[in-house]
Image (tube, rainbow, N blue to C red):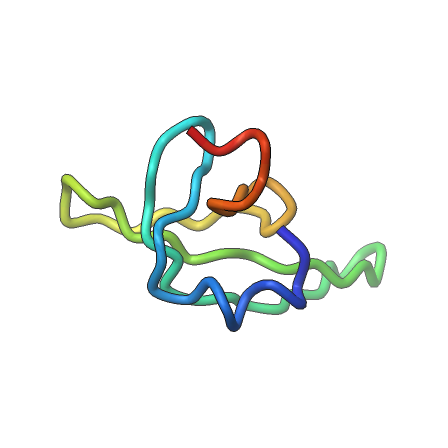
Length: 68
């Protein structure tokens, strides 16, 4: 998922590792050693009461070909 897609996909079903989650947030991080900026997605598990943090680039939206 691109950063520009986060707003429109908040609180909707997305896919991570071929499993459905609810996208509940996005965080920006900076690696202290390499100064790399990266984004993380906060995903709520639909079946269990848990939260998963993953790289935003690993998330697929309902409009993508890889979404199941």
